[in-house]
Image (cartoon, rainbow, N blue to C red; front, side, top):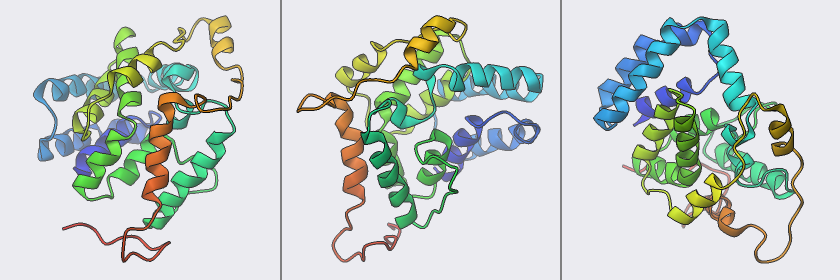
Length: 238
């Protein structure tokens, strides 16, 4: 579980010469644990070949167009949960606190909801907890996979793999709500500008709808279990 999640985390980082050189090691890590369905593992091979053999500048440009320029493909999980609402800041604090309570310190410039970082944290947890954590944003991961499928991007395979590893499958209502949101092409500048406009802050019982679930689980995980001292990581499960 640890090797597989770390490998998937690496594949979602900004392409570099180091990542290209690590492709054989990433492939071996995925094969060694053998946790992924055969069809998903074959899809990942296509991405591994693209990264290993592609022109680095082309790879970097593609990555930026997909994940940095297109809001609907953002690798920041809370972008899909809170957008620009005021709740996002507290959610960041809660998730960072969860990392710190487990002994993972992150830099001041790092955002805790960045998916590769989240996966690095998941990889440090016991398998049952890791599967449960992947299940928290599973509807987001599934929506990203579907959007990348429409773009015929090999990165789709990483998200299919994460969904396959999660302890639960995405709820249809939550997934449909995400897929109903705008998903502009990276070359449509007008649509992109509209998608990045600040969202209005909502109040009342319907303000967060299905988005409350992920944050509620993060906050619940911050509450110490019986016998665990607050601020101290729990002992790994056997």
